[in-house]
Length: 141
Image (cartoon, rainbow, N blue to C red; front, top):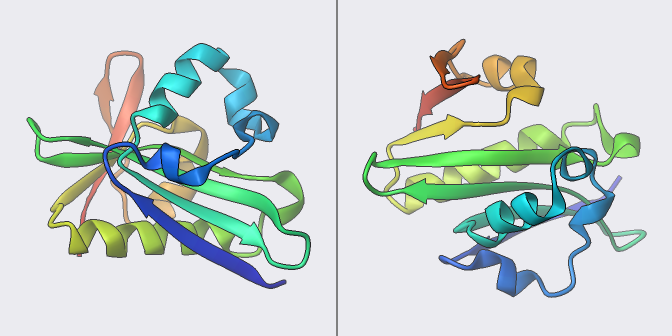
């Protein structure tokens, strides 16, 4: 499987993507489209995985920045079902961590509680209760 990883960064990273269809991803379907669109539109970093053979976007990870807390926040990590279990999520996370280090971000948190085992396996803590979810964090190295 030949996967291309693209990084889009700016306060409005989504505008760089053009016509990206987020609606086909399961997590996006789970939340109200309006709320999800707002979260994705406010991303300052999006890392995209594209299948080079089919030219299909097969996964993405989006990050918002919270300057007042000095952290970046991963809000969605989503991989299409047929592409799971082959390392795409890990590569998306590694690319993201590399970009955050370049941008001078020291700590990253995860608001995505659907991928608990994945994030803990990749160095995030077990979580701190915050409102109705757990917030996991990790230093950017």
